[in-house]
Length: 70
Image (cartoon, rainbow, N blue to C red; front, side, top):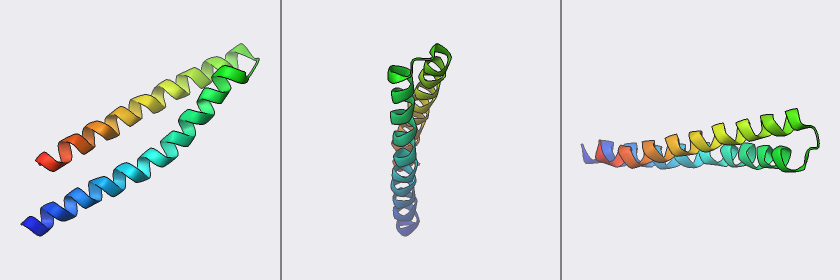
């Protein structure tokens, strides 16, 4: 049972890392669009992408906080 719990915890850590890395790239790119692109429509889309990316980061954080208690 302890091995299973340890494996589950390791899976959550790896999963969290593997999700955060591409999310960081998405958020950084969206930040660039929202700040530096002159077209207001594109800048607005960048803001929405960033907002969604940040929401996904919070979901990953919540999953990682929940995982050790399972």
